[in-house]
Structure formats: C-alpha cells, structure tokens
Length: 195
Image (cartoon, rainbow, N blue to C red):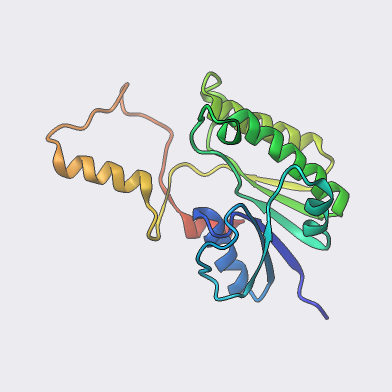
C-alpha cells in the first residue's frame, strides 16, 4: 500500500522545513510546492519538489492530486510595492491554492496563520491573515488553522536573534504599552508536531 501523500508549501523555508522533517520521521510521503526550485535540498531527495505557480491552475491541481493533507505555510512576510510580494497578492494566491486543493480532492488543509490576527486590523499582514482564514472556513474543505505567536528554533531565528542582538548591544530595550502582551514564543518543532 502506498504511503499517504502530504504536501507542504515552502518545505525549504522556515516553518515548512520543520513540518516536512516531522512528516518524514513519521514515514509519510512528502511533496513540497515551492518558489525555490533548485535551492539546497535539506532532505537529501526524500521530498518530491514541485514548482509553485499560482497562475497555472491545472499544474497546481495536479501537484495536489492525491494529497491527504496540505500544510500551507506560504505567506509574504513584508508588504513590498512589488506586486509579487504584496499581502493582497498573497491573499489571492492562497485563494487559488485553496481552490486547487478543492479541485484536487485534498482531504484536509492545515493553515499556518498568526496569533490574534483580528487585534491588528489596520496592518495588511494581519488583515491578509484574517482574509485567508475566512476563505478557508468558507471553502468547504476540512481544515485546521494554527495560530502560533513568535516561532523560534533551528538556525533561522530571525526575530528572536534580532531581539537578542539588540539586548546584547544596547543598554535599554523599549517595550510599548505596559508589557502585558498575549505573546508566548513557541518552538517551531512543537508547531510542526501539532500540525
């Protein structure tokens, strides 16, 4: 009997890499959809690599066909003026991904979001995350939405490393408000295991 297929968007990226590692440890068949075809492969060829082109619906559907689960870690971190890296473009791309998943018969979507996205409605990053969650809820697909706070772990602790760098070099570190933020850093491997 064939192993069930699990598809991870961005398995060569930060959180997607941890999800793929966890799936491989559980002996799953793993495929990634990535914009980074040709990037160094941290999986020694154990992950099938498919290019991610949101404008090619037929190819997107075929790359998802047969998948038990789609783990969507795709997002644009910074809202840049370039159309390709805008949050509203990421929302549209994710809509296309969910539609392709529906057409391909994907059984479940695990969406990586962010904690408390509705608490910052005027920031396009969070506004986009809310739109994506709403689309998924209305898609008819079986889904799970993960809302981690600040991820840390591995060799790519960008935010945590930046904070640590500033703490080592400056005598004062500013915290806005009263410091009672509902945020708790979580290890990326723990999030991957939950997914």
